[in-house]
Length: 325
Ligand code: UDP
Image 1 (cartoon, rainbow, N blue to C red):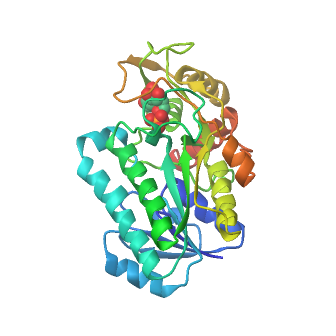
Image 2 (image 1 turned 180 degrees about the horizontal axis):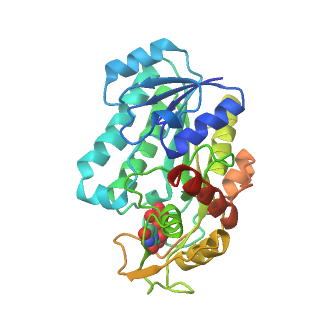
């Protein structure tokens, strides 16, 4: 198939491009390189461009009759979204609408959207299934949920079929060591812990040790980026087989606390990792764990490489090979 990957130069998008190429699809990456890296796009065609420009999008869709579009190009920092909501509504919502409108005009009917556990807000229960109430508590989660709602309306009115994949904590790096996480600034726990292990950072800050969890630190569901890519490939098959528009929660179903992650990272790396106790970070729920049963049942998805050790090992491999050369 001919697949357009928007945001294919970013963390998850770049792994997706590699997976699609390995599955023999033809890939075009469209990315404005505001957060991504040209050298992270390991193959296929690359077009530098911006979703804010309908003109560029029209030109893009004239280059190829894409079978499907995957959309990874959004801003992802919760704290920043609270301080600068305009950026989030503009990029994550309005620019996505540009993309969808261009798709409809050019008769591209399949869309796979990178959504997030943040659409659920403060969990009412865990593990979180697809029926859990959606009450996002920050502009990041709201902007993503607005897209999910827009997708329902666009299906009804224009026949655009879509799958929204709600990632829990995406983590880990390419098994071959070719790709990994390169966020600037880095805000995610696992890469920061590994920076502390490699010496690029003095210590890891632990945001809150007074949560209602077994060791007092927050519990998250870490899912390997490769397993997320596999879910996209299955979502693509689902849409191609005339499957309905749908939403899926993607996680490993197992929660690990911040302290457990740090302890495992000490084991895996064999390095000292210093910790600083800090106050809670705003907007962090105590526990976020996915119930991914629907993805298993309807897509046949099974996380295969998401053990915490494998996530840390692949990310550690990347930290050492990319940053410490
Ligand atoms: N966290 C932490 N120190 C850090 C970064 C994150 O203690 O330097 C905690 C954060 O409070 C949360 C968990 O690690 O409980 C995962 O945070 P991350 O930013 O990786 O992902 P999120 O859950 O926000 O999507």
